[in-house]
Length: 329
Image 1 (cartoon, rainbow, N blue to C red):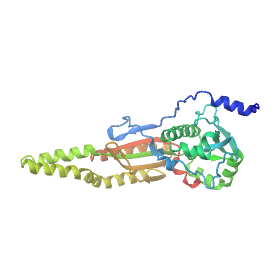
Image 2 (cartoon, one colour; image 1 turned 90 degrees about the horizontal axis):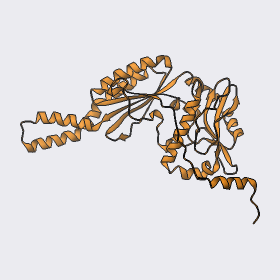
Image 3 (cartoon, rainbow, N blue to C red; image 1 turned 120 degrees about the horizontal axis):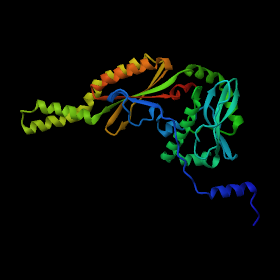
């Protein structure tokens, strides 16, 4: 049997090694649960970036070339950084599983790409399509991706890119970014010196039902048991609908009052239910740090007002401007 080439021998030996699962550490953003008291710890909330994998995974840049399996590795792109000198990435988080260390590519005129080598055995078109069905794997990749992006954002203006943005080599990545340079510069100017903050408002449906039932019991204290049962059942059915209707104007007003403090604001459809809590507002705001104290003051006042109706407001941040770089996509 002929001897294997040296490259194939090394790869075979590497494949026989036991897989070691690396622990992923990420910077924890400051979070406040304003509905339960000033400065109280909030529930675990990944903030404005927590989106479904089918939304987070996709083309981050228009016309991104398709990665093929002709090469052993692809160039994985985390984010774009605007600063005079190359980003110092020696202490950057490890990044995505099995990828190389984060490094910087010069796109010219103070724009840098933060990239890593990604093995096509894991991140090629066919393997990636298979991995995307494993939501735990996707979540681990998203956490690792965000950790590198947030590290690069310290003290710099960045454009974070979506999960699994891949190119056929460094040259293609740089060339593609240079073609988009006018758009990228406009986006960088828009987010420079600003932070993203997320606001979510939830309604505790169990608590809403309990309040309605207790009120109905007081009203029906002297009526027959049959009538009382029907009234209580009706109250349980209508409790959440009435609470949502009563609080809709307050939630809209909350968004507007916070948006007036920010430079930009985005509101997404609140279509999720988390346990007993219904998400009724999912919004993100872009603002400079000098306006943060005022923003938090408005958020606290809003949380107090909404709390009277059973709503809980959670503030999370600061984040890189994930939701305000759409002009690049």
